[in-house]
Image 1 (cartoon, rainbow, N blue to C red):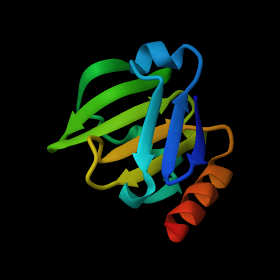
Image 2 (cartoon, one colour):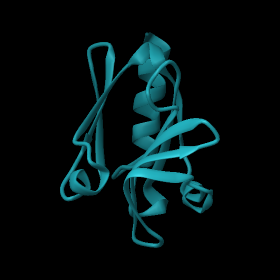
Image 3 (spheres, rainbow, N blue to C red):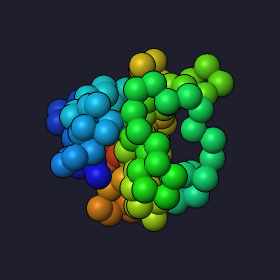
Length: 118
């Protein structure tokens, strides 16, 4: 699971617990000007992930790490699809972040409000 907050002009995603090990990341910091938006999307886990490098993918258990698909890089950290949020980025290493959060609606609202202000 991930925890999302705003720190000044940046979106900060902190990976929690053992997911740090599977995702091989503990924190992502993205300038708000590079965040295009966010949506809650429980169906995203059914889509093709592409090539895993590095990370973990055990269907029905966890998707974590960096995945490459159609020339894009996507960061995943999802165990429970019902709590998945997709964050669209521009001019960043990752094109999208697909993360599990405790409250998807509140997370989307936080990101949308922060990007409107930046």
